[in-house]
Length: 333
Image 1 (cartoon, one colour):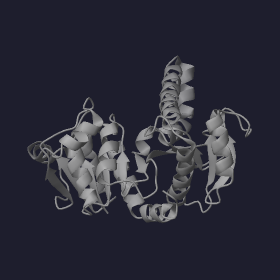
Image 2 (cartoon, rainbow, N blue to C red; image 1 turned 90 degrees about the vertical axis):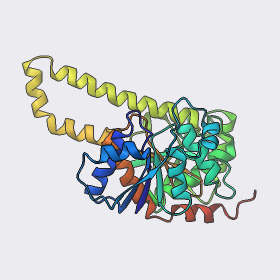
Image 3 (spheres, helix red, strand yellow; image 1 turned 180 degrees about the vertical axis):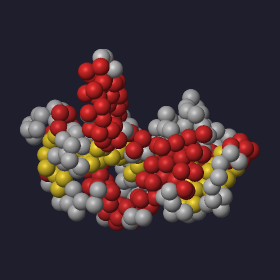
Image 4 (spheres, helix red, strand yellow; image 1 turned 120 degrees about the horizontal axis):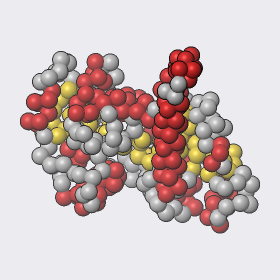
């Protein structure tokens, strides 16, 4: 697989991108990585490492889209930015997927402008894979669309179901609608209408509403919500995980008895940290477009970047985009 990586996206760019790319090549995660950014800076840093130099290709880009740049304007104006040039490698078929940990709004805007929506898809959605008690689940949207209509939620359910088949290897994914209660009569008018339409949609296996307390129990495969709620959920979960491990660490260092307990519970602690560590999952896919753009967190370290490349390589081997194009090809415009 060939992956195009925006080398100037993270908060500490280009160091996490360079190290993550080298780790990915050493672990043979993909065949080739296009590292896109300021050529002189990248060459200078890469000289410090030993790696297969034929498998990391530098593509020069003179501009950088910053976190403070206006997303739509910068995506159109900064054609020589690392973000846009990396995306064009994917658009032109030279790379099988595209990754950026840069300005999320700019990644979405550029992907929409240059890759384009799949025919009849109303809005793209960011889909994130979350670890649960039993397995993994996909939640969408987690930030692309603040306001959603009923038809958008229905399409998210269809896209999420197709995605779950490919990523989770589930033949008939369970789809749930996030709501304040399990009963179909609860929630806003929009949510209640969406429930009815999802229940009557033969393209998906809709199992009803899901409450927030059930999110991480593994009782479903796909969770549908609007981007405003989804993003709050994502940030809340991240914050809870950070707080839990901070509290555990504080208690382990409290006294010698606690330190003995920490020693005995270390295997469990390590397992939990690995399972809940966001760097293990790398990035989220922007669904509904004619391509595979992957959004990573700005605070990503080299491990996150490496795992984003792993994720990109895995999803590139599927027929997800063509399956979505076929799914929506018969929908009325």
